[in-house]
Length: 486
Length: 125
Image (tube, rainbow over all chains, first blue to last red; front, side, top):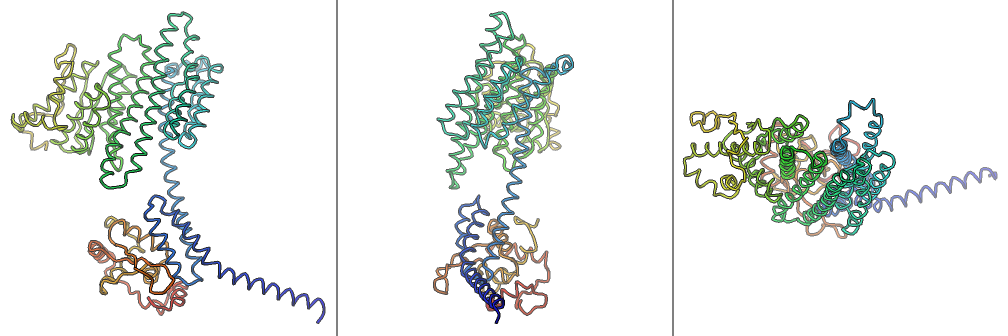
């Protein structure tokens, strides 16, 4: 045997031994590796179900024991691949929802920001004032980081502060409003009370700078004060309101997470209401701030604009509350119609209000909404009661999908008169349809048809000057039409 | 959609196996037995079991201890009364002539992995 051949033989022997050892070791280590992969796959697959993680974990390990050794690793790998595919699909679904939600939110904020700044009205002047385009672009750039507010709230807050402060020397005419409160809300929602309080304190600097724009806008000290004081108040209220809403929602969410028993889940329904109301309250604060800025507390038609704000807030409150309770989320054309028309009212000088039946909302749900939404505030509560109870009664007596328009008013008194007249028409319908006994006793049932005391408590009478009681477009109170309506 | 669960071929296979076991003195089957009888992979079978458990068509039970020493206990599944009715109705509608699963190893056209698994497991169900 030559030396070269001896080397080849030795090499073959060594390689064979190594491969043999490797195969043997692999065979020995395969069950261990399969066990690890299987546990990992179970944790990945059942992230949202801790109980099933425990059950399936033990069960699938037992399954591996039953399998031949050759199959352990491929089976575990197959489970892992399936779990990864599931998680990937789940992430994609969540990501898609998050993108839609963020796009909608940012567009709304952008609209508010630029509307409060009132630059939209100068749209036609962009050719003469090119800096307007720069302002719009800067406003958009400011809001983009907010898309990451849930992942890195503190960082996003810092960016918002920096951009707001930078806007002071760069854009003398720009008044960024929504960025700081939204970032404060995110910090308050996702971080501890201490961190959120620090963020709230830090927000004083950009808020102060934004409020101080009045010094540059008006040379007259009296005008400066008239601009700065109310706007500073609004900024502070909005930011503190955002912080408070964030803390409240955080506490409520933690409370919901701790509720695992069936009875506790029932109780958490009320907590979800509180979350919805807090969110709606935030919308109210934002809306009030935007319209308040627009009015600058000098408009003669304050009552008229106040009516618009209330209408918008009412629609927002009801919509958000219903969305928080109804599972799965459903589309309510009536309420959305109310919201859209309320916005368009302002643009077209408040000429039309549109209210509608919430499609598919059950009586119990509406009653629950009425009871819970009373806590939002006295004024909004009365509005919700009037509209909600009217909707409740009508939803009881008429088929789903029916729409009740309340049209044609041009002021707060008119609005209340119209809605109250609507409720009175409903009362008349109940009286004629179910006799005076029903009309007398039904209002005493809590949360059902208790509009009578509310109407009495209203400071505005139905026959208030300037109010026009419109005739509902449905044949209410006509007994011979009952068969067709029900 | 024929009910609370999404109907797929693996689901029908698993239901057939469970229904057959139920008809056979209300036997319970563990996961590996279901996999072998339905000739479906583990992830597929357990995905179906998840859906059936969520819909309350099946119920699971841990055995006290494994018949062989030093082996972890197994979880056995059986159809619930609701599951029996629903599965029978579904299979009648979707598969009027039920497939025969046993003995699988001698059937022509059996997959290689199925043959191997039965070979290593002793060919028993």
